[in-house]
Amino acid sequence: MAASGTTAPRRLVQYVVVRSDLVHTLAWPLGAVITQACHAATAAIHLNYNDPDTQEYLAELDSMHKVVLQVAGTGALDQASLSILSETLTENGVAHKLWIEQPENVPTCLALKPYPKETVHPLLHKFKLFK
Image (tube, rainbow, N blue to C red):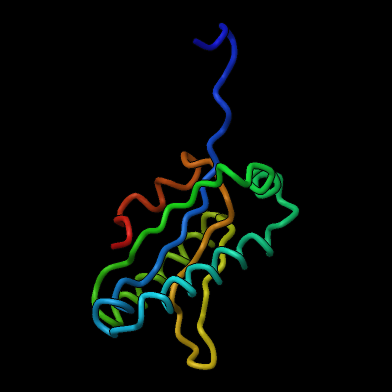
């Protein structure tokens, strides 16, 4: 039992949001989709490397917490939903990286920098876990 007056450590999470149609409609290989998520997550960490939350997240390598969500629709709807989410995050000052696969110029996923869950969950609650 924790001593009186102590608080639990903050739980930082990095959210990654992937277009589910890449696998289910467009028949991309699962490995290619996972690669997209890895690119976005790495880029978000790189772009926000000096951020205090990012540094705290990286300091706990063996207890990193990521949540992979999906935008679900069909084709253009998934792409539009991902773009709308990116705009919403930008409007709310949430640091993230929208990954656009090249040379196809296709938005595939986005990743947020690490945040305390309660900070960003309200913007992401409508998205389900990727499956």
